[in-house]
Length: 136
Image (tube, rainbow, N blue to C red; front, side, top):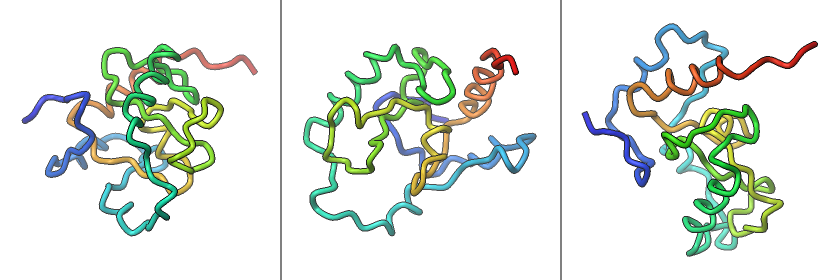
């Protein structure tokens, strides 16, 4: 089995359903890039040529921490995405970019969780369990 690679975001062919064993259905957020393929984007809503550099810089600027759940992913940076808040992939101003883990990114409308390499779902869930709960 291939090892995770920060530069690789497609894990086609991995039997990732096993990753959800023991995870309650309401905590499962998954789909595939193929499910996104039906979403036709207008030409102006495409990633810019410098998107990878912008995204990497934004992740570094926030210390590789998810803005929604708070987990830090310095060890597995490939599990972080940079989300376009207004859904316009060509709009890279700082106020439109939110760094989120793959699980939080999948919760946004029209977003999906791609298959994860073995062990990554457990890793993310273990990090989430370590975050202190707010006092009520």
